[in-house]
Image (cartoon, rainbow, N blue to C red):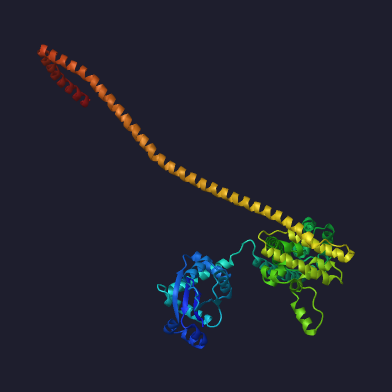
Length: 550
């Protein structure tokens, strides 16, 4: 007898864990006891023991591993972990690896040759490991494991939800639903304004049939008695017909309507403004829907039209779910009530659903409507799959599919044989390759332009910072230069003064020598001069006193 040992692989947010189950044969026979022991940690530890644990290096590494496990692909980290830690089977012992998913089990068995099991007692053991994992691994707490699970869960869901912003089918669903609602609301509001304004001008309803035009005319005319010939040009611009404008003028002169107060006219005018604004918004919304359909599902829009294609996507729920539908389901999409009624009463099933709104079925004869609807549904399913799974969206296939439907209509009417599908698709594939190459070139050019603009902006920012720095640096340099100039000027003046002093000193010395010699030769003259000064002083004093007295 060959003994069997069970090892269980557990993928946690923090890393891979490999556990050994003791007494596998006995445990396998007692699944109810294992279920009871899951809640008790001591009893569970006696059955299951940790063999190895390999933590993830980073959050990005954990996300990469979890993505590969969810897709059923064996990651390199898991491959290395099992190679190093899983025991090699011997002659007397057979090793079995318990896994939670059959896909990853098949991948392990193919690449490593380890026999895997995902049924029986394995789910219960994995449930117990999930409950007590933070207690069985050293250094791991309940809070840290919860944080790791929460972070990995957010990153995994964020990675799964990632999509191209320009290719959102949700916006198409919301816009087509709003468009249908606006059509209903505009119709009800226009009927209301027709009834309201008809009390004053009942003949206008028969002349102007269009609801949008009626609201504009009612807003322009206001009171029919105050309508003059000067207002005819403006009315012709609204109605776009001179005969209609003349008929409205004639009817306003001989109208059977009642008189209306200015307050009622103000309210009618306000309501007409609202109806006109809603109609204008409906036009802009339709343009937005067309642009979105050309961006998200160009082939479907080229084949069946933007509005019908958007209704098919909204009824299916998304473009991917529409792509998964077979052509028979696309054919009767929107006629589910009629289908189930026919199945209950055992009557004829419906031939078409939302596809009926396309122009092809209306152009076909009564006998060929079922045929053309089946053919059109087939082409719609092909177009939706191309739009869903193609990387570069192009309308090349949609145009060729539309031509095929046109040829089939001609074949039903005249009997001319259409082109073969293989030949048409070959031409379409070549054209699609050229279109995708052009689109890629445009994207590359845009990226290059963006890079150039970023570089230019960064360079401009650097130059401004350099200029600021240079201006700041020039200020102290100029101050330093001024100081140096002042210092040089001061030194020059000092040198000049010193030179002047040096020039003057010998002359003064000579003068002093001469004076000393003269004093030595005539001492009496000096005394006489001194006496003369003393004599002059009292005379000066007397003169000053006289002046003061006068």
